[in-house]
Length: 201
Image (cartoon, rainbow, N blue to C red; front, side):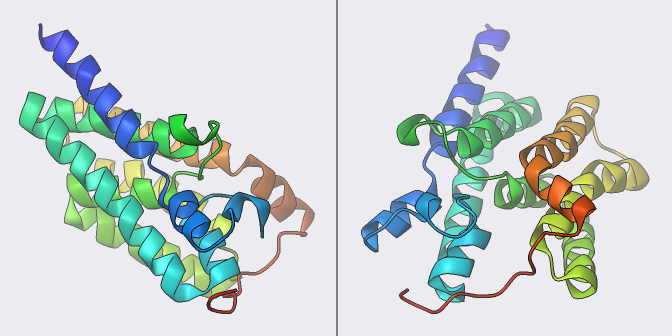
């Protein structure tokens, strides 16, 4: 019975994660962010194309859906349920059921997961993200470094159950996988710097 409940939390997480805020919001603005900028349905590309305010709303929406999924998972099956819901939400955000399985790159969802697991881990990866941004001005490099910072900081802080650590390792590998194209451009030196777009573009 416990296994069935955990599977259900993964499903709930996936369905909530599939509500891709970037796509929903930009369609209401008369477009689809997947057809603009980098083609990614995430907060960074929304900010690049539509401006920082719309990007911030997208980020907040992605974080809220993740926290909601993990809260529901925790209510259903405790900490393991929250972790299982987080797995589902990550997959749903990147491969959304409602939008042709073409979504974001897991960055905002990963940050929200870190916040749910531990505010200390969240502050560490937030610091990593901004330090990398000031150094490189390339969000993809910041995202991958912060993603790797999740399991590393969890190990350094200690006190996390094995399934939470497994989630952290999965996040690090998954974020790098989702940014594999960016990684190739970073290696070649062709990855562009980040700039905000004009509001209401």
